[in-house]
Image (cartoon, rainbow, N blue to C red; front, top):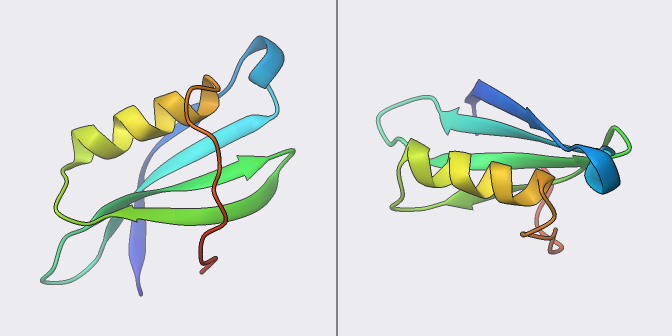
Length: 76
């Protein structure tokens, strides 16, 4: 699956080791998702089928703020 980077989020304080990137697939079908990192190590990509860019941005913010935690997902 090909995708492009739309934006990046970085954690602060207790969660300063977290980073998230908002992605969009390239092609006819547009899906949004986030890449989650901890200590600069890629944990995985979570795709949000049927949701928009704003939803993915909120998920990225929630991850870097410690509200959303990583769940084992397929790493691409």
